[in-house]
Image (cartoon, rainbow, N blue to C red; front, side):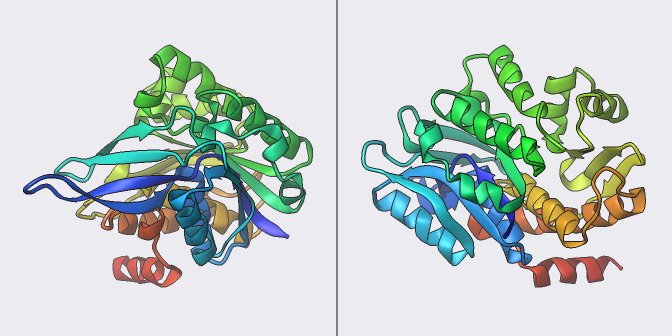
Length: 317
């Protein structure tokens, strides 16, 4: 039995490691669903991935990294027809990042319903997904059907809208597609900007209320080094973050999300009736994970260990 199965993109992040005399890039395994699983696996969750990569050097590398990260790859399909998706990361002085994607006609968006290993979904507690699968067909239909199936079979559904402007023709198209995932989700993680896009509200409580009316039971709004805001029927508030000198913010939200899902399942919290103090405990742990992640380069390689996180928590206390 798995604790968490994730479905969606798995790709190569080319992370800049120097700029003189010209840019030099390091190959890293990335893609939000894979990052989330790697984080949860490091904390002790049993995890599995569903998605598609090319049967090429990049795809084979990604499969090896998942295996080394203790993520089950029974649901990973290797395509002979489509190449592995690539992304180049652009870093600012403060560690903020943006992306240039090489994705059109690539493997992750060519995931079809027949590629999906439904046995993995049958044998998991939670299914995690993001909106990048909704940018085009056939992955949009395939992932939506998988999520709908998991929801109808009583699985905990966790969702990260994960807005990437470069992948959408317009903000309106992105908002419509990102909103589609909200229909199924029990837990949603959004950034401040994504909360505004999806709800039209800059006030966290109003944004949380709007999302909760859709049936979302726990709303997480990440606030960078300021921490994270939670909204639940049992309370709302901000959980303080951890100051960190960021070198690369890639994967920080995924570290947060992986830690949140792991903690909730590991502690057997009832997401419908989780108490405010329990949420604060979960978020403090997840904030610590994210603060460590931003001090390292890459997605999956930057995910901290349980020991790293516990050391960070002890230092604050």
